[in-house]
Amino acid sequence: MTKLWPRPKTARSCLNKFNERAAMVDLRELHNAIIRGDAQVSHHVTEQALSEGTDPLKLVNEYMIPAMDEVGRKFECSEYFVPELLISARAMKAALELIRPLLMARGDKPAGRVAIGTVKGDLHDIGKNLVASLLEGGGFEVIDLGVNVSPEKFIASIKEKNANIIAMSALLTTTMPAMKTTIEALKQAGVRDKVKVLIGGAPITQRYAEEIGADGYSENAVGAVALAKKASALAA
Image 1 (tube, rainbow, N blue to C red):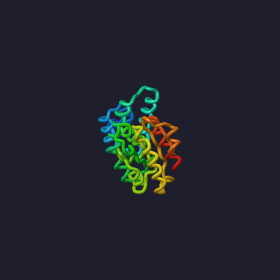
Image 2: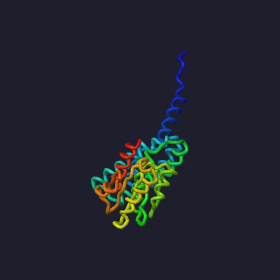
Image 3: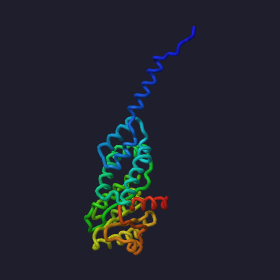
Image 4: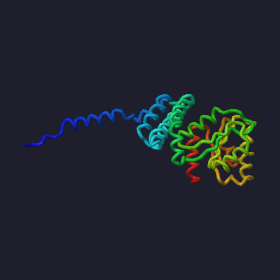
C-alpha cells in the first residue's frame, strides 16, 4: 500500500511560513519614510523590525544612511531645500532613538565622534542643529555642545569624550575670530593633532578656513557630512 504524503501538515506548514513572511515588516518603508520625512512611519517600522530581530546595524547601514544620502542628492539637485532636509532628519532621528541604545550596548563603533557647537559669543543654532542631525544620519556619534561654546568645552570633548572631529559654526562676522581662537587653544592644550577641525556658517569661506588652519570647510549641511566622512577616513 502506497504511503500518502502528510498533505494537511505540509500545507499548514507552508501557510504558517507564508503568514510569517507576510507579518515581517518591509524595511524599504524605513528608507522611504526617511526620504519623505515621515517620522511616525520611520519610528513604527524601526520598532517592528527590531522586535522581529533585525540587526540594528543593518537598519542603519542598508536603509537609513542610503536614505540620507538620497536626501543629500536631492538637496544638491535642488529637488529638496532646507525644510525638506529638516523633516527628513527628524524622521531619521525618530529611528535612531530606538537604535542608538542597542548599538551602544553591544559596543558597535560609529563612523566617527564629532563634537559640534556654535562658537563663543554666537547664539545661532539652526544650521548647527541641521548639521548635527545629518551627521547622525551619516553614522556619526554626535556630541552637541550647543551654542556660545568656549574653546575649553571643545578641548574637554576631546580629552573626556574622545571626539576625533571638531565642527564649529559661526553665523556672525563678529564671532568668526572665535574659530581661530579655538584652534590656537587646541594647539596650546596639545590636542590639535588628535582631531580634524571643520568649520562652516554664513560668513565663512574656504579662504578663511585655510587662513586659520582648519582642516575643512563646507557651505551647507550636506557637504559637511561628506567632509566629516573624508576627515574620519583620514584620521583612521
